[in-house]
Length: 315
Image 1: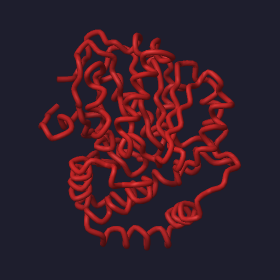
Image 2 (image 1 turned 180 degrees about the horizontal axis):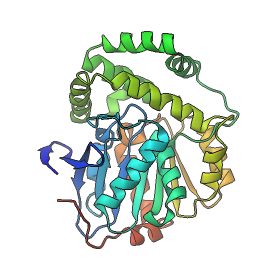
Image 3 (image 1 turned 30 degrees about the vertical axis):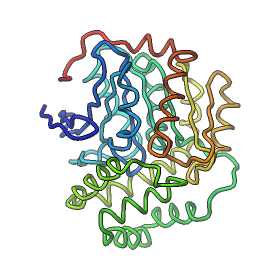
Image 4 (image 1 turned 90 degrees about the horizontal axis):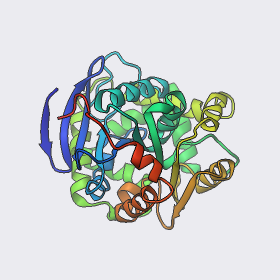
């Protein structure tokens, strides 16, 4: 394992059938451990705005999933199921006990699946605008068109070619404009970290194929036709759950989150007004306050269970 220090966290590497990069944001060694799971096309730096606001009480780690961030696929699959297994192995490598999973978008989906598959290792879930099973809702036309294009081999390749011609700065700006109501709220140093990761990923020859495979997998997992296993998995989750959602999310409409909360009355739902798909970037102070309040109240059981014993493999 190697590590380097960068603004917003210590960049470290661990071998899980190939190198996996993760950020260690610090926190008390005896504090409850939160493992942050980014979304589709994202990376560990998606947590760089909110993580430092939690490390007074909590230890916070964030891996780059396979085919995302600086973790190359390296012959590993990049679909939801494969990255769920990778997350499971990461948890086992960094903690001797259960952890709190905090997942955004696809990361929320993977976190829910992990809590269903390995309930003993997940003390609680913080789901930030998670990719949930599809329900009747009014979709954003641009988002529907974008996913349709990326799911079509020829048109998807044309879209990826077009994106590849954008500068790292332009690509990050384009992504944030889709995910945020007001991307100017994202701290400038955090944007710079995203640009740096995007610049490094430009040299990864399999990046487009990795993203396409992950996209198809997310759509299939959440969809009506093939989403039955995901729905059953969600129903089996028994740990405390916080569902934090922006009310102006264009990718996962807030109605989807409200439907999930109605179907799971033990979950705590908090809706942030005027916020999009990535509250942890667009409204980090508000998000951190909601998370801290929940971990001190309805999520207290999760916080207590995630307070670690000796943790293997983490410096």
